[in-house]
Image (tube, rainbow, N blue to C red; front, side):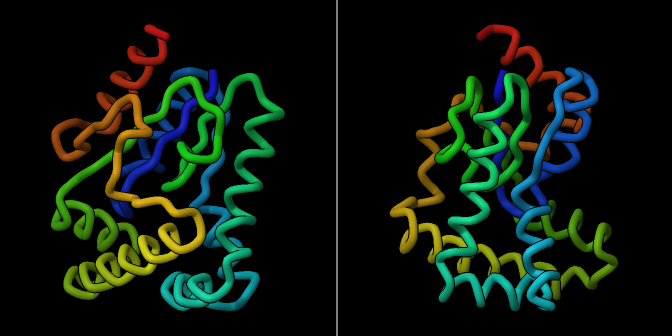
Length: 172
């Protein structure tokens, strides 16, 4: 079973993916981890690297390619990433959503940053990503038709979210 989990920054994809991975005994990979690793390799923070990636389409292509390659080699895998559903041949494609204030609070706590700064960064990052996805892949990230299941993570605990996905996967 291959499962993709995508969603906006701070929607809880990493937390739920880790819980789901443990519950189902399926490994997972994260596009965000790959992106952050690449930012470190370029000695940039996330916002600088997002801006850099706007003018360097190879960044996005490398992330997408790495995920797709790993998924092709696995029988069971959870692939976490904003565009995973578009590039990974998955049995179940899940999208997370949550209000901006909720997502900003989560990131603020996780990164120990002031809430107002995080909100501005989320908005800036979202615009940067949407621009790149549109220009590079011709994907409108707001179009959710590619997903089998959409979950508002503000309405459930991470454990409940993992349970919902596990149940949906069991129906396939």
